[in-house]
Image 1 (cartoon, helix red, strand yellow):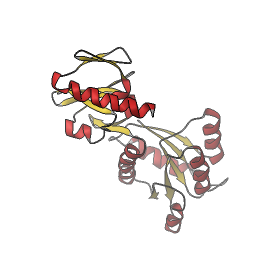
Image 2 (cartoon, rainbow, N blue to C red):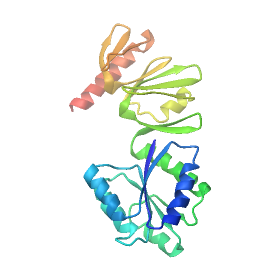
Image 3 (cartoon, helix red, strand yellow):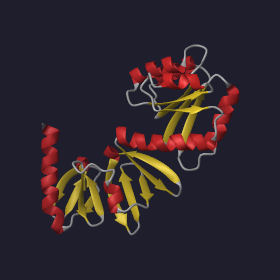
Image 4 (tube, rainbow, N blue to C red):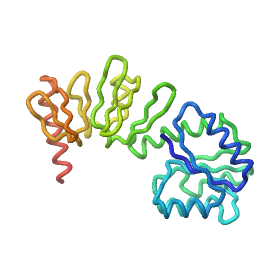
Length: 236
């Protein structure tokens, strides 16, 4: 789920943005609205909360969106900033701050979806998250949280300690997002996160949640080698 903070002093523009957000069907979006930069900063500092994406109006009363972005950048080095502006003159100013994109007003669903699509791909790269789609919804799971992935026919089942997700991805598509130093294929149907292996026993791996996953005989030696290399990297 994409967590988004919107900060704009103009209520009319916020309403347009909310309508556009609510109309987004391709992504699972959760957003909070702030009409004051101070209100947003207080929330972040007091709640120690953060968002994947911040959408700001450039011109605001207490401080500009650019100044706000600089402060948040100091708290979260990986935050994405999308600026709203009705004035093309400000567009070049946006890139003085490490930012992501801008949306020129008036806001539309098409503009918002286009920017969010790029943001999802970018977040996948910088946060090492696994991004996938299922039934027209997009999901993000941190790669470190994945225990294993099981292929069942055309579906891939992504298992974490707390959730089970499904997606229609083939093995090639799965490996395009997985780090081969952290994940290993132990069976025609299973990819396991080396981080969560507690032990390799006979023809199974025991995960740190107590789950056991079958290991193909032909892949056991490769698993041992990969696991040993992983342990060495963790120690060193």
